[in-house]
Image (cartoon, rainbow, N blue to C red; front, side, top):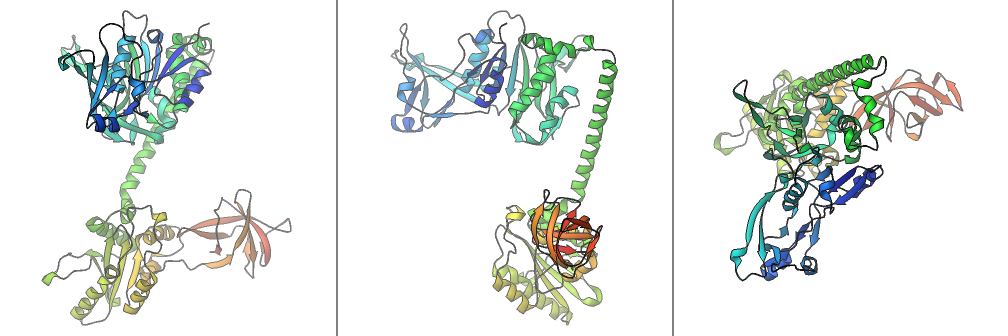
Length: 570
């Protein structure tokens, strides 16, 4: 039995190797980009031949897998672009002229492939599996070096989407997508939703409905994925000559193709795969076994219910993101957005009187960003800055000048000054400088009786408050500290772990007059945040005990812990 022929174009060798285990695979190319920078700079132009690689019998292939984003760049070598044999009185080459640095043959290769596979009548449409990329229009010039005049040059433009029907709309990059409400779309993309990227959107074609006397959407164009703006980024197109699966870019192409073949192509296009047809026809409902129809219907209902539950959770996730977006904003933003997010945070913490002050003042003097009336305790003024590095001395101390003015205005010395920095805001928080103040800046703050704080502290404080490690009242009181503000919870040290077992669920620690019992809640710290864990078992000398006060013991807890430096008692 002849194997199914699959022509792979610009597809990674790893993918071709997997397909070759089952099918006859030709690993070809729509062309490789040629680096012509040096040639064009030196001679003004370069003569090129296309480096397209198709099987000689490409018209006999019915399945094509193409990656429009897979570009390989090769150096220009004159010997690679010289014809070995010339038949007739023409000698034609592509021309690339300065200032062009890369010659792109791929759109030409797409046009040529379609032309060679669309010759004459077809017994059935070809299967096109295309991983999309941004639309590229390239203008080509073909010059006959045997001619005496440039008038014989041929100029034309091609696009990389000439490989199929062109439904392209806007070129736009993104990675947030929505699966269309179709079983086939969920089957294909549910497992890959977090690794999808797209570079091109598409418009749905229309057709004329004679009965309705109006233009309607073409039913043979089936959207599979849309972006957050509702633009189509993946679809199936069915025509007499081709069945095209236009797909996004995915990292796990091998795993995706396995699902596409097994769950879609083998079932609905089994006649393209004679070597495996006997394995798949039983999936068609006409051949269901007793009770199979009922169970399949139950499966579909369960799938629908699951999808509805996922949609419900997605809506709740979106609502939660909107509700708590201020926690991300204090780590990302600068200027007014940062100030407003800090005020939202302060009001959550219980500073109900937190207000935003005007940034400009009389006589060109700066005002504080935030002011909090503490009642009998006095006034808290806060300067907030979002910066790409760490704070300068002048930025740290600016709040001191404002504090002196406020004291003079109030004729009282009950004004507390605090500087909050969203340092290195363009860097992931765990990779930032902690703390973002040097020793001199901290000592100057102590001398001037003002506080220093950074937003990563506030982010962690939120969770430490919510988890009960520190109260909101205690946290508010610490805003009035001088020097570097410290939000460390008041926990008692239990001991330093020295070994971990059973996938870090057993912690070995030496106790010193610290009594613990099964069921007690302990805590550990990681990157500024504290986490509760519960004791489920205690062992000493390979014996299980209910409580212990001294010596080396193994403590089994209810969840895995990281490499921690200290265990705490709550």
